[in-house]
Image (cartoon, rainbow, N blue to C red; front, side):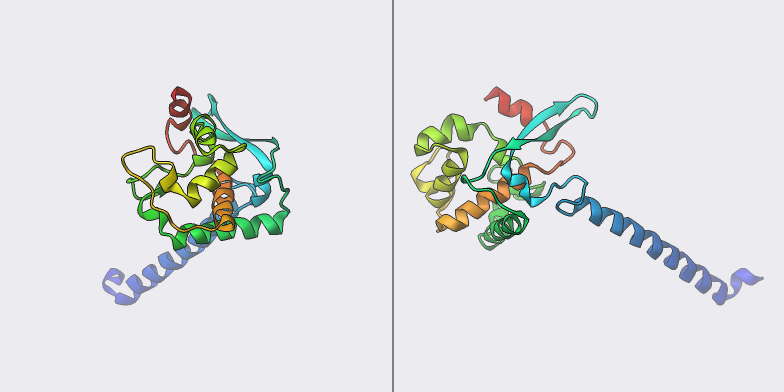
Length: 199
């Protein structure tokens, strides 16, 4: 019988593998278009740092969604696409070089020793607590001061170590965190908006 012939099974395995590779190729191309910055999917272009970003509950989707508003310049400067890409790229490299993921979580990945930073730009504590504490006029200024000298602003039993960030490195991290908060993460972290409103 033909099912006992190894050539039959070999041909079937090769055919199934080729079909699955074609499907994987289509799915990969589609996914890359959706997750690429500015690709029209869940990830906005880097120039979103020039805009106000907020978080609002969408009853149709039953989840909190980022809302991109009008112009709100970061550090009082308008960044074009190349400048924004370079600044956010630098911020990502700073985060990677300082191993922030060893304590913090980004998009659900990392450790749970320190706060999740996925939506940290949207945390109302920056305006309510950190701006007065750091004597800053803007949220980004407060974030930079905290990142450069966390030991000056202890608030929890777990203190962030001083990572020796320069002004430009701290500003790049803030730009990265603002951009990160604009990503549609399908409601992750869960209940962030409700929890932040209760503070």
